[in-house]
Length: 319
Length: 251
Ligand SMILES: Nc1ncnc2c1ncn2[C@@H]1O[C@H](COP(=O)(O)OP(=O)(O)OP(=O)(O)O)[C@@H](O)[C@H]1O
Ligand SMILES: [Mg+2]
Image (cartoon, rainbow over the protein chains, first blue to last red):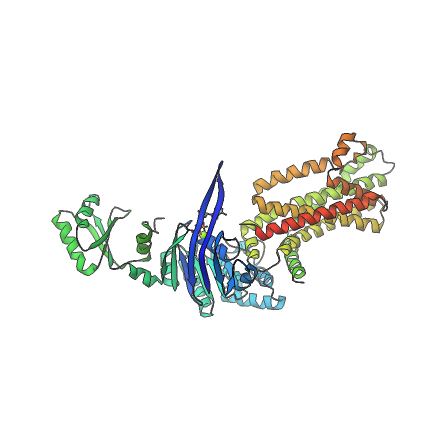
């Protein structure tokens, strides 16, 4: 449904006197299949929005190619627009309009007749539980209600693909769960959904496939399960009583079953091992022999954060 | 066809939002009425006009041109608010005509300006102004061109600078010399030659001369067709340029 090759974009920006060039996206290759929820996971400034804006015809790529729903992005952006919906990160509604007015106008901008647009608006309002507020000005909506209007606008013309830029940022847990259901419903209706997020749990639970993005590049791509499986073994988190983790690190470094070892922010250690259940007693024994006392030890299956960490050397949680 | 429909769509939306804010209507009419009531009486002796009617015949067209220029030039602020709200970006992902995004907005500005002009004309008529309907309609055409031009320019510049902080001083800088050198409030007949020479380079001074000739009932005066042509050409250029900015603007 979407295929990109070497998509690039850099921005020139001015910092005081100096002119600087920011390589926001540096060569993105992606394949998104029809009918899937594809997630773009990455920290702030990774280039997610820039990539989406290129695919949605809002900015022109500096290089590379993209084919969207069978149409070439560079040569035929007008046709691409007809087939996609796009919901911006920062919202898209006007304070003084009502949700119904916004929906009808937006549908009509896609060429629908007035009657058809009004019908679609009624349906979209119901689907997103907005009927009750439909004729109130947007400035009176809560953040979550307003976000739902944004999403409804993005799909009012029933596009083949919809791009949702951080659809759940700023929503409370309940509204987020609702939004996930709504996004799954879009998939059930046959739409291809491309979302960006920096929530690990969202990428994990909602997306069929994800691409992890950092510094303008895709560093990993696959289903959440595949990506996690790539990190073979388990993760053991160790917190040490009193002393700094260096001493414990020295001891465990030389143990043969530890494949990788890192200090965590809160003064503990993160160990990657092949088989947590078997190796944990050995870790305890080794530390005990060295006279180091633990305050806690936990065993984890690897998370997407561990994937991000092994690919970039940083944790997504802290960035 | 699609273009006309799109323009109408955008125009309807913008117009609805405008009339929903009655405060604009009030401000837009209150100010010119004050000019008419308080400033015009000073003018009769200054213009050495023989009657009130003659003073209004010189003053009213200038006032209307002034309103058209300013009414248009400050429309960009509304667009920056729309940019910030994401409304423009939302429009730009749809296949809607980019020229319609501009024209729908500018035509709203033209319509509100003409409404304002009609009210002022009616008031001035009550004070003793007299003008032929045909001449008046041509003068309104001139005003419509001016409002279309200045609002398109303002929208285009707003899309380039993207911030109120930059737009405000820019618009003031443009408006000031335009205003001083067009003979809008007072004709430049009595100005020294060098000042008149500069004013010849100010397109709006052509527009004012044309409008004054029309209000004087002097349809055959060269100033009429010259003023209209100068305005038409510059308006076309402004519209083409601003529509391009709508097509290309980033964020
Ligand atoms: N119009 C612009 N001009 C200059 N720099 C820009 C522009 N847009 C984006 N950038 C820069 O490009 C980089 C990528 O930005 P982008 O918005 O794509 O990140 P993101 O992954 O969406 O981040 P976030 O999670 O914060 O939304 C950033 O360094 C940003 O500062
Ligand atoms: Mg973003």
